[in-house]
Image (tube, rainbow, N blue to C red; front, side, top):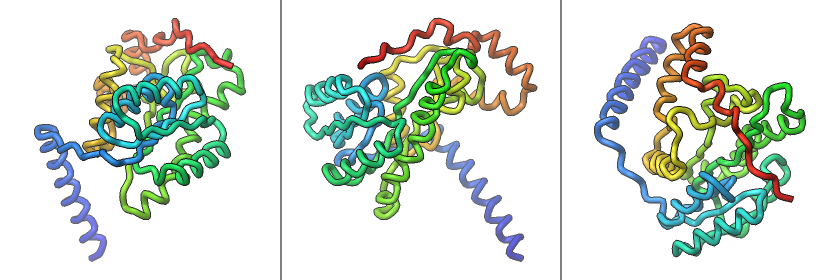
Length: 262
């Protein structure tokens, strides 16, 4: 009897959730207010991390900036304050080191408060072929792009659970959905720009909107949703053939990376 009732419950809820998703395709969810929230952005010293920090600050949030690049942090902080926001806190943190993450997290909790929106954005891209990628660089990629998410969650999630309030965001990669040459070490964590190339400002705005509307998954570009569907039904060889045809396999051929600062 219990099995029968549980089955009916699953079927009923599945139907309800399906209808709910259809409704929200037509009528977008209302954006929640993030004013007063404490938003921590890793990799805030440049790129999408900097743009996300600026956007959250403009919405009235207290922004906590993490990066290993001190000069990048200073510039992001300057830009945030230039836009009129004053609630900004900067911390040097090496997200490849668990101990550093826990140490800086404790410092944030003491000096700023409990983080209510955590954006794991920091990432490493080698841009090298599988055999050319040095072992230490592969290890650092895994430590920053994957393991750091575990350590930041363990640091900040307990307070969110205790207050029944919080939001976790992973800027993850769809490189795990389709193979790309020179990205063998980051398939599970980062995604280079696929077709079409995306404007960082557009990406940041879409991410903030998804957070404010409690959207569970956001894939950019939207072409990625098709990739997810095709991967589930196409033979592996066909998927590789299409990826080669679309030029996805060679997207990283001209990748130069960011100059390393001492």
